[in-house]
Image (cartoon, rainbow, N blue to C red; front, side, top):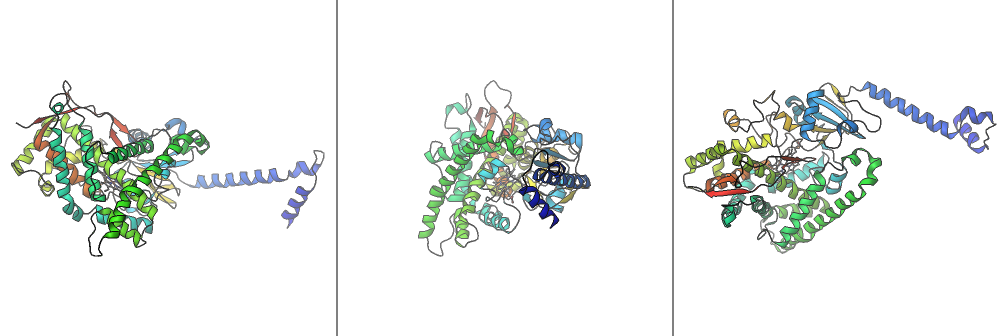
Length: 519
Ligand code: HEM
């Protein structure tokens, strides 16, 4: 009551500089100032109580942005790990990021405390492209994520799906392998094999997803889709927007960038809704009750009809899966081919293994398990050039403990899986491309060995490894079975420079490759 009376009297009374009460209590400004100071002190007190992970000195407002900048790639974070340890914290403006860089801590985040750290943390651009996490990759951990994960996994990422679809894979791979020798340049000046292999990967995933294929690289729908995906990837993966993600008061400077993202996202979503999904809806509406599903989209649309997920979820899920599946598989394939072109003896050894096991018989997916050296080459490539080197960003919803440190809720937690797999304290000569290490020691690739986590581990891990691993092996095996793969003329090898992104790791340059039909 006294406070109310004071407020009333101080606000209703005209105030003048000669009035002593005006100076002694100050009215609203003093109350607001006192409130801000008390809150600040309380927060400081609370912060002091928290035992936060080490990290560089934090400046007010900007945190570590001056020291670290925008480019938070895996190698930069590995250098910081050398300085601050296996767990460190960066305060990037208003974003708090904890980076873990050891197998033990990775196990804590992904497995032991997997539930606590199972949510995701996006950024201003990912939020646009995923409709604020409606896509499953960025959906918060909970019932909705569980439902989406089941809905994606069953028609798309199981061994049964591989068994049912490998004939389609083989058909597409054989067409691509044959096409490579259809131009003279393949044997002379060399060609960018990326273009044909990318069409092959699109066709494999689009036949599985929509029962639909593109005729050739000039197919107008393919041209449009590929252009959208490439631009989406460029905009989402760039580090150039980080400053405005960290420091919201700088967002006006990013207005045009964000507008471009929004417009592109609308176009992508319309393409999926009005063409790919509209066709499946039309065919489903004409199908008989006991007609089976022809592709993954049919199954997903049935789940939508049963009200398990919303139409928006279907759209965002399919749109983001199209990027997630194609981009990771394609960039892994490019890395493997570049490595075996630059290491001809290893390429010969893969070929010898296939010849010994299969003779003249053409490689098919069921043979893959008989080819441990081929698989070791794939694993070694994923170790050295991990396509998602920091995994996807994890987040804790509640305060948590990690390695004796307190992790405040809402912290973005990055697992530097690339550094764990390339740390000389754990791996012998980690810079060397040496598939033998995976032959001598059968290191598991799907998340049970925390030294090697190209697909993550635990609840939010890699549903796609079931498809991606045999598919990569099939493509590489068929190419090597048919051709000797060589660098462009007058070149010793392919340029292995890399292009890191928010989550991806690409080969920077697309190089010319020559093929020679095997003697
Ligand atoms: C070589 C190929 C691939 C690699 C290296 C890869 C790697 C990864 C990694 C590291 C994660 C994050 C794990 C984590 O944050 O703990 C992930 C998540 C995911 N991947 Fe892949 N992936 C590949 C292919 C695929 C394919 C082919 C698909 C789909 C068919 C796919 C679908 C997904 C989905 C949906 C998630 C999110 C899972 C969740 O949040 O619950 N991936 N992948």
